[in-house]
Amino acid sequence: MTIRIAYSPLNDAALIILAEALGFYDSEGLSVTLTREANWSNIRDKLAYGLIDAAHILAPMPFAAALGLGPSMGRIIAPMALGANGNSVLVSTELRARLETNDQSYKTLTGSARMLAKEVERRRREGLGRLVFAVPFTWSPHHFVLRHWVASAGLDPERQIQWVVLPPSRMADMVEDGVIDGFCSGSPWPQTAHIKGQGEILFSDPDYWSLKPEKILGVRADWAESNPQAVLSLSRALMRAGQWAFDATHRDDLVRILGRKLYVNAPIPAIEMALDSGGAGLSFDPQTATFPWISHAKWFLGQMVKWGMIDADHDFDHLARAVYRPDLWADAALSLGLSRPLKDEKDEGGKPTAWSLPAAPQDIIMPANALFDGGVFHCG
Image (tube, rainbow, N blue to C red; front, side, top):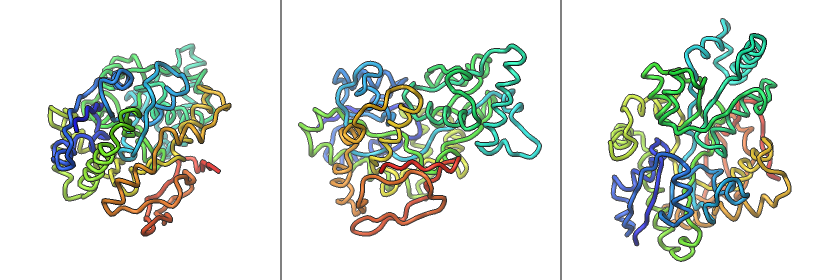
C-alpha cells in the first residue's frame, strides 16, 4: 500500500519522520512518500485536492474547514494525535526587557501578562501602535494560547493586539527587523531565533498547559474508508515511532535524525534546546500523548466560540466525533499492548500532579494536566 504524507518541518513531526528513518513503515507493509511543506495552507490544499492521503496537521484545521472557515479541505478524520506540546513564544529583546520585573514575577504567565498590559497602556499613552504578534495559522493552537495569555491580564485580544499570519521561517527575521514584536510557533524555530540573538523565548507550551494538545494525524476520510487496513498499519507505525522516541536512551539519535537536511533541517543546538528539560515539553509517549481525546476536540471548538470565530449554535459533540476517532486509535494501540481509556472525554486541567486514568486492560498513569491560570474545561 502506497501512502502520500505531508508534514511541516517541526520537531512535532517526529513520529512521521522517524517511522520512515527507522523503517517502521516498511515493517508494517507500507510504501510511504513524505513531502515537506512550507506552510499549513499548502498541506490543507493538498489534502483538499487529493494530492496527499494523510498529513501532520494543526488539530483545529479540520474543524475550521468543516465550519466554513477558509477553503474546504474535504472530510478529514484523526485516528491519533502526534504527541503533546512543542510550541514556544519568542519576543523581541526590547519587549522582553520591558516585561521584566525585579521580583521575577514576569517569569510566570500571569506575571508576564500583567506586565504586557502595562506595556500596552504605555504605548497607548505615547501614541504608539499596537503590539504585533505572529501566528502560523488563524485557527491554530498558537493563536488560542496567545489570546488566552493576553486576556488573562484583562486585555482585549481583538482590539488591543494586532495579529498577523506568517510562515515560521519568516517570523524570526520579522522580529529582528522590528516588524513584529513576537510570535508563537513550533520548535525548533523559536529556539533557533533565540540562539541567533533574534529575540528571547518568553514561555513554552508546558508553561501554559502541562500536556497541551497540538498536532494530529489528519487522514482523508474517503481514503481511510477505502483502506482501513492501511490506516491501522499507519497508526501502528507511528505509535511504534512514539515508543522509540519516548525512550530517553534514543534522545541523541532523535536529535540527529530531526536535524537532517532531508527532514527538519535545523541547527542541532536548537533542536536540543527544544527537547531538553525546560524546553518545549514535547511528549511522544503513545500511551499518554497520542489518544485523540474528544475533550481536546471540544476545547478547540470552544476556543473558536470564545474568540468570536464561530457562533455556539452547532452540534459540537457530533463534529468532534466526526473528526476524532478513538476507536481507530484503540485498534492500533491494543495490538501494541497499550491500554485504552474507558472514556473518550475527560476534564482538561485541574491535575497539577501525575494521576491515574481508568483504562483497560490496566489503568494509565497520566502526567500532570494543568493550565497556567488554574482553569478547568469540563465537557459534561
